[in-house]
Image 1 (cartoon, one colour):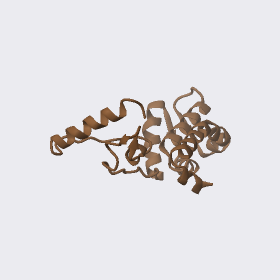
Image 2 (tube, helix red, strand yellow):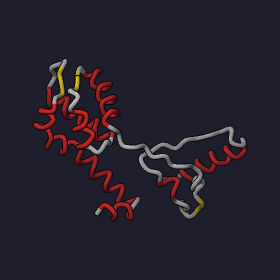
Image 3 (cartoon, helix red, strand yellow):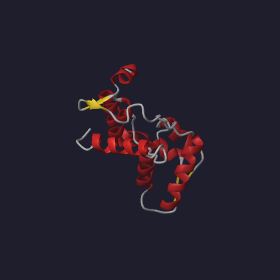
Length: 156
């Protein structure tokens, strides 16, 4: 956490209290660490347990279908319905990883539009799809190991 963290959150918290709750804020990110650490640079963390983390659930097949159809429409791509369960299962419902995989599938069909993404294309591209998301998975695991060692150990 950088030098601006404490003064920024101290100001927001004070404003929230001074205005008796009429000023609200939301924190959005990839993890809730900023709300879970009681001490930051030797001082009380102004937002420690001050917000209630709400975690997004992994995408269900219907969510994968909705996202893929909307994004694919802009790219001139349609998806055969059997592709959505494959993407959900293969990438654990993780929206970012699914988007990366869809981008790789779009590259695989080439510039010809309109085009259709089929299950057979997914099968042919499976290894390349995994290669495409591997750096992101490695980053997720690194962050998990760094900030949440107990949870990371539970995966091992």
